[in-house]
Image 1: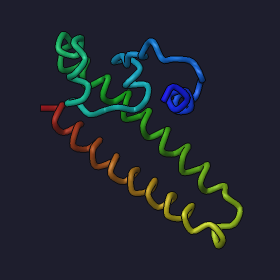
Image 2: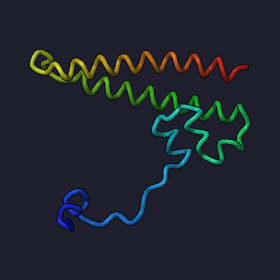
Image 3: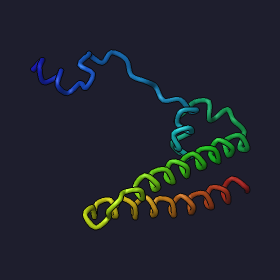
Image 4: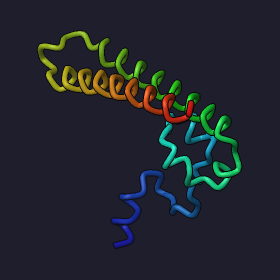
Length: 112
């Protein structure tokens, strides 16, 4: 059993600490959902304006990430032999479209 645990741990060392996600890191990673961001205690100390600025920054970060993913997939040389790449590209485009809708919804919600 000990060997199985070592194989599952990619680093080969026992995991003793977990990295905690901070509000700043979540926003940097493109997490813009106010319900998720509300899990961070400091979120509730911010004014509505500051919360919205965090959301805007997260939306921009997510858009940049999706655009980067799209560009990486679009650089595949031959789509004929790789239909899974074509599907992934279409999925990223769908996520970009959904993100635009979310952005409009959040702008509307936070401008009340």
